[in-house]
Image (cartoon, rainbow, N blue to C red; front, side):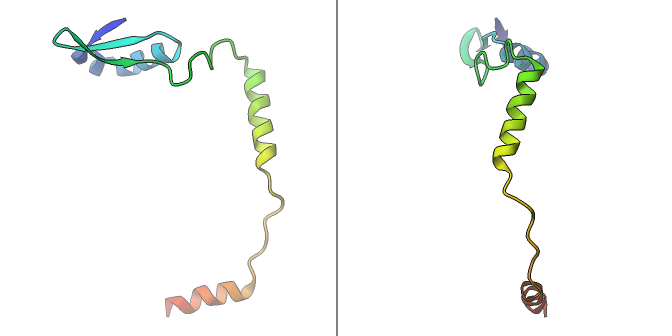
Length: 85
């Protein structure tokens, strides 16, 4: 698709959606091609099911777990308070 800059400004959300779906958008200024809007991750979203997305997010979350939160020793709190005086 080719879009004039003025039109692209008015329809940016729609153009981004179309680019994310795989369409290439060429933006022109005075009839000359100046920019190209494409998907940041070509084909990444196409054909993905909700279940595969949930599985990917669950696996990522599990890989980032580092255990139970640790308590802060009282001495650390005391040091922080002494800095405010």
